[in-house]
Length: 201
Image 1 (spheres, one colour):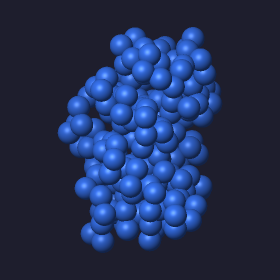
Image 2 (cartoon, one colour):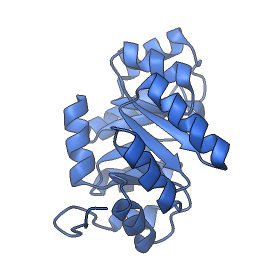
Image 3 (cartoon, one colour):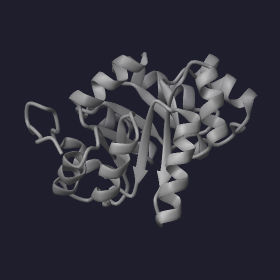
Image 4 (cartoon, helix red, strand yellow):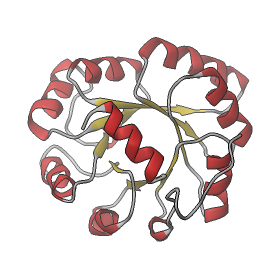
């Protein structure tokens, strides 16, 4: 999957399924989502998980810091790209974004906004690494989503602490292209353009 195809999916299916337990793999594969982020697994099973989602024509990203047994260095990222073959990675680490891009993987840089300093340093970090998308956490910060959207020419994904559809809608209305959701009952919500037209902000 290339960047343009990924952006098209994000625009059409506005939810990403964040899978944190193996028992929800099948449910995520059946959901109408733009992509799946795996925060579960280890070096022994991760290729099987990735192949499972690819068989369902779903882009699959690995939250690298949550996958056991894989080193956070050039060799570890090369192993992922050449053997496991996910669509891309999600990480908070600048160095991993740069290494993954060199291997041809899509990249989502995750930022935790806890205070004004983290907002400023996050913008600086993203400008340096130029990931394919930015994920802002937690999702319940609509003003920050809007501020980042005005500062960056990159898709903004937001996630964390989402418990109901209304919270997803607020994030999308404030400029997020998609929401990353770990609460599996919410994966049944349909957030496509056809079902939820959104006003521009």
